[in-house]
Amino acid sequence: MYWTRRSRLTGIAYLTPALLFVLAFTAYPLARMVWMSFHKWSLITPPSWVGLDNYRRAFADDQFWVSFGFTLKYTAIITPILIVGGYLLALLCSRGSPLRRLTRTTVFIPVVIGLGVSSLLWYWLFSTDFGLINRALMDLGVISKPVLWLGVDADVSMLAIIASVTWKVIGFGMILFFVSIQAIPTEIHEASLVDGASWWQRVTRVVLPLTLRTVLVVTLVSVIGSLLAFDQFYIMTAGQPQNETATSVFYVYLNSFPYLRLGYGAALSMILALTILAFTVVQLLLTRRSHA
Amino acid sequence: MGMDLIYAPQFEDAQQLVDLTDRISAWPELKTASKGHMTVATFENRLYGVPLYADVSALFYNKDLFKQAGLDPEKPPTSLAEVRTYADKITALGGDIKGYYLPGNCAGCNIFTVGPLMWASGAKIEAAGPGDEPLVGDGVKQVLQWTRDMVKSGNVHEGDRTENGETFHLQFGSGKVGMMGTGNFNITLARQQNPKMDFGIALLPGMAPNSSASFIGGDLVVVPKGSDRVDDAVNFMKFLLSDEVQVEVYAKALNLTTRSDMVENKYFEAEPLVQDVAKALTVGRTPYTLTFFEQINSPQGPWLKMLQRAYYTDDNLDTVIADAKAAMKTIANQ
Image 1 (cartoon, rainbow over the protein chains, first blue to last red):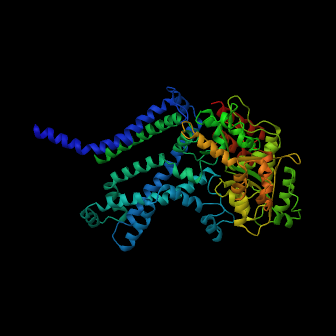
Image 2: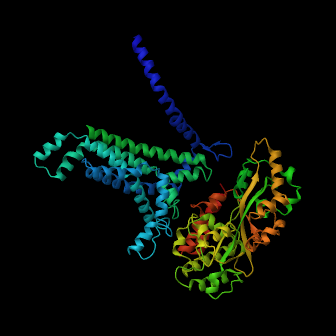
Image 3: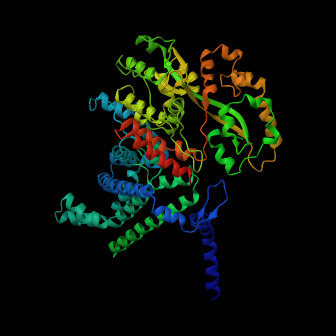
């Protein structure tokens, strides 16, 4: 009993720093945000209790739902690109050769650049008057006049942003898939070769099923990241044209800070957080099923 | 502290700034201080600050392109109809040359340079507060029609549509624009960018001949609530408004003086362009509203949406204005 109690105290002692961190940087901010969502607060005036008014307003706010719809559309388009693209790259680079190692490194390098920096880089690459992309396309004769990539047509802007984000993050999925593929025992590959399986059959019937859990995890991370997209849209389009590329988080930011409606922004954040939680639960259930 | 003057009313209403009325209202320097600055530094007849820095908008025009187009470089346009006529001739030069510039994706650039066209045409733009009416006067529709016509007639580059303010200050100095609304800051920038370009400055005109207006922007010196050094701050304000600082600090660096009676000085006399742009202080104004960002400056706000619909669509302008009016009133009434 003495040892059990001592073990327990030792365990708590080891956990305490992590617990304090979570309390300070997760639990407290979350509780504070819930509190804010029930108040009207401009930051420069004292907060006042408004109950559920912010939530009622959110559900009647057309722009929030337009932004939410756009965010879902963006997520639905970019997620397959990142998963399929990352997986194909991992397959292509899974064998150990200097060229393949170089390719893995090259594809992974943009991952370590901050998303803000990457977005700024691509903003200037897509610039109508000063960007290299238009210059290159015109010099190659592909286009006769500059393309208005950002802020004029919502779909063109979204595709340009998807290109920039894909360049930046596809290496992350590639590396995780690569590790997962490498973890498959060699004997299984050899057995499938002995059975006469083609490359495609090995990929679809051996590699993919054995790496399915990683695929689901990477999909979950990608979906959450896309639902929380902000930096790239703030920097590259500022929600233009006419709010058609304003994502949910962008709209939360707008209300919270420039419009000085922290309480309303907190309510929007709560709705978004609960939506993402729902997605996560579904994803985890799928993951558990695949493991079984 | 220094703060963007446009947001001062919001902070004054929230009682976040120290009331300085009893300390400074009798200063003689304030009689000639920038009207725009003093308007926003005042809330419910109480005074909260003095001018720190002044920006004004004006019409910059490329004299080289004027000559090439057969226009008199010493006679800038005095009405929007003349701007259109001159722009047509400059655009006809061909190549990458256009007669005018309209920033299509920048709310702040437009209130700075298109807003004065409406003011000069007798219109009012912003809703000051709850119950106030925005976008009043025929000038709103007339100017929107004029801008739509400028775009349709090919007098602006197609790429202007993506301008969100990031490269606004580089456009005039490129030498490819005949005329454009921009600020006093562009005198130095244009010279650095294009030293050989000969250019002039005039006031932003309205629909009627010889009508003009300008946007007075910049910063105020204010004192945050709770400050322990109000006396020191007030002394500094007095220092800023003194004759010596106005001339030997502001004017010497070719910044606008914040007192209109100090515009005649030896430094400005040596720089005619600065003298020309300083005239804008006399016809300038600063919008006064408690919700400037949300109504006007926000990329998602009704002001930019209205302008984009006017510039780039065929939507009925009465509907465009009515929609913007309703949105601005909703914001002001919150």
